[in-house]
Picture (cartoon, rainbow, N blue to C red):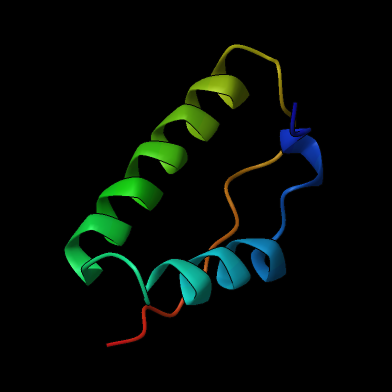
Length: 60
């Protein structure tokens, strides 16, 4: 299981860069939007103490 409290911008950017080769940019944006929503929910529920990392660059 992945510990979301260790998720940072560098790890997310690596994921986006890797996935762009196998999915469309729209699919990748949907995946990140879903992850961001879950992350914000976890903050509201008190499971995490910080906001979702911002500043991702989507490659085209």
